Image 1 (cartoon, one colour):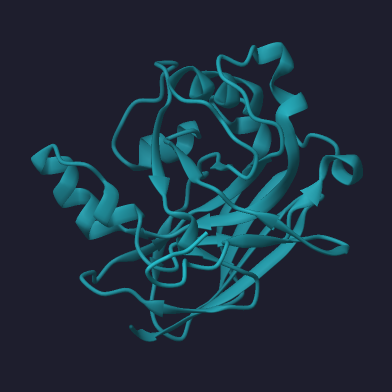
Image 2: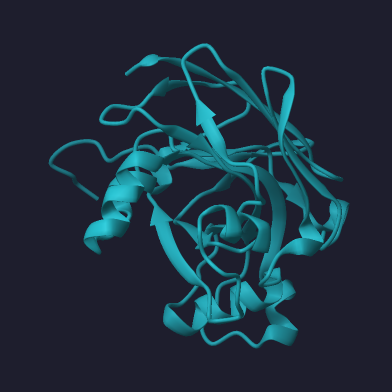
Length: 231
């Protein structure tokens, strides 16, 4: 196929224990999926249907990266998350069948320009500029289901410069992974290569240039990145 200029390289994530890469198509994110985090953001946790926002695949950065401090913010926040990697697509996926669509799991961090998010909330505007910016999706190596199973409990922790900021458990998610997949697939067809960031526990906070951030999920290892000077 002939293009007027070379297309962007395929975004991809590393695969644990393999030289092969996981091609990334889209990144979906679940908002407010841990009760304690919902409370710290000033809301009451409930079982209303979850809501979603997105990040573009090119926002992905990997373990060991240095993330430039993004423009237009003075309040960049970390959000440790379990990432679900979809291997088999589908629409209107039944909750009972949802896990069969999962290829693997990874450790992630949904970086957020919190001050821009606050303005968007106040004005009733979308969260795009707060959530979907360059290098805003930190994703570690994807662990195949064949190696790790389907984690539904176990610690999820985040440290900044060696100090623990977030310390939760996957079992505290309001909406489980099968529920999230099923609900999301009712709105649009999921495709192989889609990633789903499943929400963050309490303890979100600011990052500044020079910080080193580590996220660890039980059974999925540790991901580390640094915050560089303003980009």
